[in-house]
Image 1: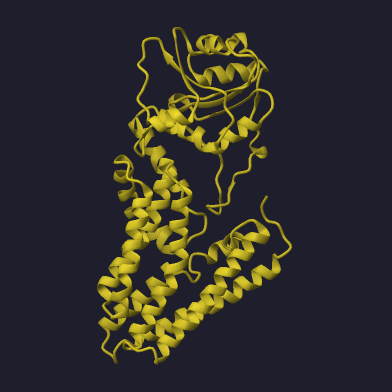
Image 2: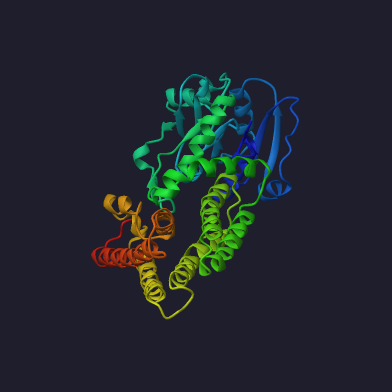
Length: 404
């Protein structure tokens, strides 16, 4: 079974590596006679891997492995399970023995932290959920209290309860992939990203992950499309310009999810992705203003694009100041801010607004691009309004820490 191109064991080991836990050993328990599975060489170099081949039920084999150590705590994981990486850190920081179980029947999954010996009642258990249930029943472990778990994801601006999902057949694999896909969407985002792009992103994501395409390659393709659109926009060639813009916009949703779902995110990728998101919108806006001015810098639409550039920059500074003071995104300050993010002045809503106006100009007889020019002025006015709203949020929450 593979989830977005990675075997379940590799996903689990990648989670451990990415969490940066202080581990003296990562022991993979195989049944007697099982072959050691192939893993990327870099993963084997990054983790203190060892392999254990024993006979008997899981509980008995686990007890034997525990008996060989000097009382160090063990985090016991099942390699047929997709585990929320936040749980790994939470269990690693815990004190004493701790267990958490989810699901029913064949989908029953468990995560276990053990300090000391395995209780006698658990040694006959055949799988990890049965081991964890025996540890809880005997009082050797306590159950995870979800009230102690911080479920807020700062980068995604949303609450996401911890998950532990067992993959036992093709239908459960498909359900888990769908769940992971949607769990990587931001809690507040624009309407194109949330409601229009997902089918396209889903269809691109799976083959890219299966073929191990690096997300930075997707980002670089998006960079090329971004700046290739500029001369088309500036010359008034709206068809190819808009096609490249929407292509880039979809790729902007693909690369981040590909990185998170395949554990290939990096500092360079983050800088490329977010740097592009910040830099390119005003370049597009100025190209729009130039084209709507008839190819001159002396007409009103181009002057409006300069105002748009200035207010856009101030709005971005408000967002930076808000995160610095509060610890959360300016779009996640309150439920109202989350709802407004759907239409707030950003690249995608503005792109859609201009596209509709250009389409209306093409369909409705009239003087030149009158509706597109009016829409562009509307974009400028909406940017000013959004900046004013965000400036008010910065002032209101200046001394309020909303996270951490």
